[in-house]
Length: 165
Image 1 (cartoon, rainbow, N blue to C red):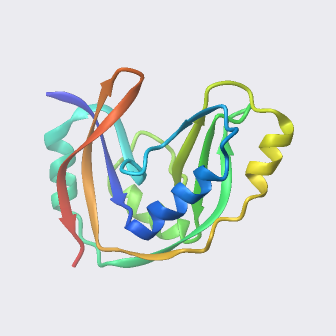
Image 2: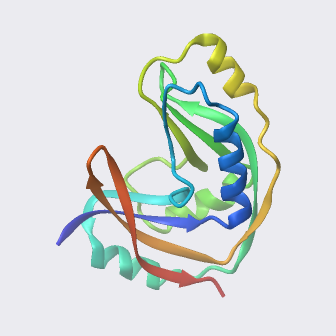
């Protein structure tokens, strides 16, 4: 059965706390924040694909645990609509992402907010000038998620996890 699915790195509590702190500093943001339980670092996204194919790719992954570090705040789109925290070791992740034959070009980031309308230039400058705390963390597992539309957003249901050895 075809389903919207993706492979992602689950984020540890310390990274989620940093994301929430950033979100709390932007009370005037005209959009929606990614909820504390939802932030993840997507490695591969298939849109509509076979869940069993994605499970097979995850099962066959050969990867040892590795470390990552948060970097800068950035945005996608013109005008800016999707805001994210970057990852310093993007090359490691790009190599890993290629093992999953994703539909999308890979950019190492964690989505933290989505704007509903054009952002005032002064607020945009403020957002992009914020420095992410350089939180280091170890990636010990990678998960497969199914993305299910619910009202105005997608909910992510974990379907499988691969522990890195």
